[in-house]
Amino acid sequence: MTTLLHISDLHFGRILTDVLEGLGRSIRTLTPEMIIISGDLTQRATSKEYQQAADFLNSLKTPYFIVPGNHDLSTFRIVERFFWPWRNWKKWIQSDLESQFSAENYQLIGINTARKAGFYMDWSRGRISPSQIQHVTQQISHAPQDQLQLLVAHHPFWLPPQYEARHLIGGRDHALASFKGSGLDVILSGHVHLDYCHVMNGMIISHAGTTTSDRLLPDTPNSFNLIQGDKHSLTIARHHWHQGEFQLSQSQAFHRKNGQWYET
Image (cartoon, rainbow, N blue to C red):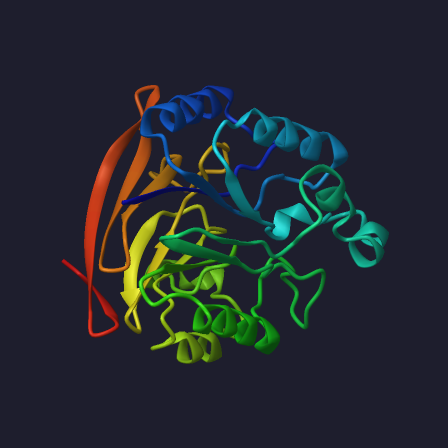
């Protein structure tokens, strides 16, 4: 059985130290085989914040898989944003912006959905391009049929109705139409600091909140998700920070039938 830990929106620069330490304890207890980080390692993409994030990553005894988020681009250093947008990421984190990892039982496909600019005022919004969609479907088409397929992005492909003002990822409809029936099982994302799981177009969309920062929505604690199972059956357990530790808050079970996922 595959066990994956999904964390997001760590926001070094706005870290809650006790929560970060609690995350370390949870990792040692749960012993996942991979930690998935869906963007926003930093708050302002400064060298200091990136160095703190790198120190955290280097302290992990578990392999990790990571993609950037919009906060990993400089907001106020405009020259840097347009000419060297990922300089600090590549210096401190890794040279790749779109990682990929394949194990016997699962495959992780990472895409960078953050953009340095766009035809809208809010540059925090993300987008998936036609070439990225094609890349994802091609990688899945070459994978073994029994291998669980997970896409990792920063921006959301679905939001609860009360949060839709935060904006879905650009190109979402084209992406979901292309992914439907392709063999993609799970889409993991972050960005809005809200945790949930939802089935759409036969795929599981699993969202992690901010795991370690003080940038919390009202009545929404720090959180992470634990994913366990295989191509046929999955459980996603959402853990919330409560009374000085991460505790199981809700567990959802899913099963796959005729190429589609359903919540049990």
